[in-house]
Image 1 (cartoon, rainbow, N blue to C red):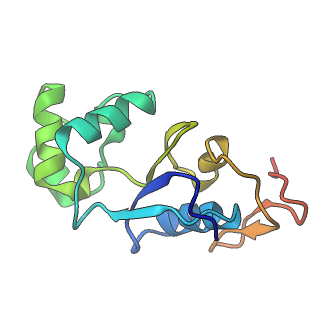
Image 2 (tube, one colour; image 1 turned 135 degrees about the horizontal axis):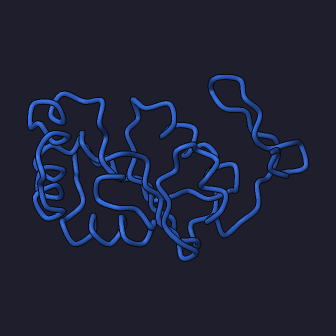
Image 3 (tube, rainbow, N blue to C red; image 1 turned 120 degrees about the horizontal axis):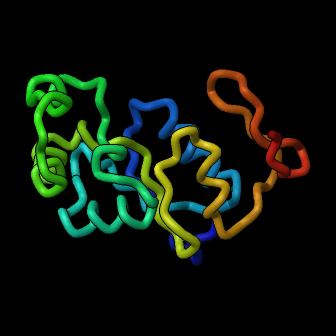
Length: 144
């Protein structure tokens, strides 16, 4: 696998979407820098940069189906973006994933095939997600 291309994934190995995204990166013959963000969360500046570069609002970058979201009453309370970022750093499970950063851009890769928009190399062959959905054909071309 090549290591000359800089690709970084904020990864949760327990998440199927994150695993599929990592596999798509590797299907382009790229071995990314893997950051398990639950163990090593980004800094506030890095998180802010990723969210902005991905064209998202802070609220769009939050996971809503996890306990801290409900416990902090985020949906019912008018928190500032700065406060939401602080919650995301205090409780990294609130950071939606996987974020992927390349020289071509940053994406919250949900669904996983969004990563294809920013990979600096073509897919090397067919790719099928863990759930059986084929997203890349044998010629490395994206389906759909």
